[in-house]
Amino acid sequence: MAKPNLNLDAERRIQTVCLMILTAIGVGVSLYLLAPVLIPFVLAVFLVYCLTPIIDVQMRYLRIGRTAALATTVLLGSVVVFLLWLVIWASVSEMSQHTGEYEQELTRLLDDVAARLPLEKLGIERDKLSSAIRISRESAQRVAGSLIGSIMTVFSNGMLVLIFMLFMLAGKHKPPRPGSILEQLETQIKSYLVTKVLVSGATGVLVFIALKLIGVRFALAFGVLTFLLNFIPNIGSVVATLLPLPVVVLNPALGLASKILAIAIPGAIQFVVGNFIEPRMLGKSLNLHPVAVLVGLIFFGMIWGIIGMFLATPIVALTKIVLERIDLTKPVGRILASGET
Image (cartoon, rainbow, N blue to C red; front, top):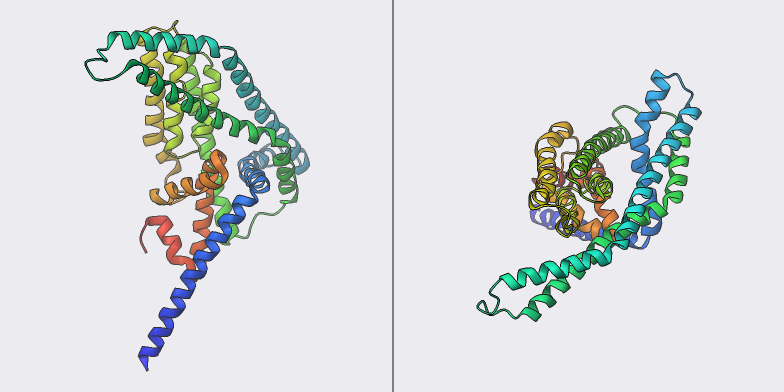
């Protein structure tokens, strides 16, 4: 009698796995198709978590009413977002004005390097080398343009984000019940986002000061981009370190020592913050396996682009908490947390 029961249990497990796979595919397609609405909505959710502590501080210590605290917080957030948009827009406009200058310097630098290297002895044709370098340069320009374009798109949709955020803040009066899943979600995500904002902000300020003292152009823009890119785990810090490289290398006013320092110092700042300071401050607030974070980056990067990579880690953390609360999906939640069932 035990054998039919085992077969029935195995069949139910297979059906459950198949349904979960189909559900995951359906959710992925829905997220992709509804991206124009979901991206501003999710951004608004995370902004609410970031701004809620500011409202609480005003109400608790300054004895300000909720409506006044809400108004001042939204005003402050709007000013900060506008200033970030203004800095990036001004820097992009200034960079476009110097495009011809940078191209001339790049051509001169490549000709100088090609003249010094024994390309013929190495079996390398100079025309093919120039073509390969040109293709690489165009690819790098497209990647940088896509990154800046995605960030500017978010800022341009700021009104929709602001509307969502206002309704969420206005409708939130009571904290969630202690011990509930909403309380756990809010506590962990609020802790992660506030800590991440502080750490990323400090990193951006340090990078800006270092580049400014060295004499690198667009130091403020690179500091802002460092702040934003640090929300992308692992990959963001590397991109933020390499982003000033073309401007540094193609600036004839900088000496060799300054060019080396312009890359080495931001890299050292990112290394110290990413490997020592940030892990101590965050601790195990999200308790996510590194592979789960990487898969989340790839998945949300595919369906939502660069913005999806910004939002991937907190979304995966929320998903893990929900899965751990459901008996049927507890093993999946444990895999996301520790990689073990």
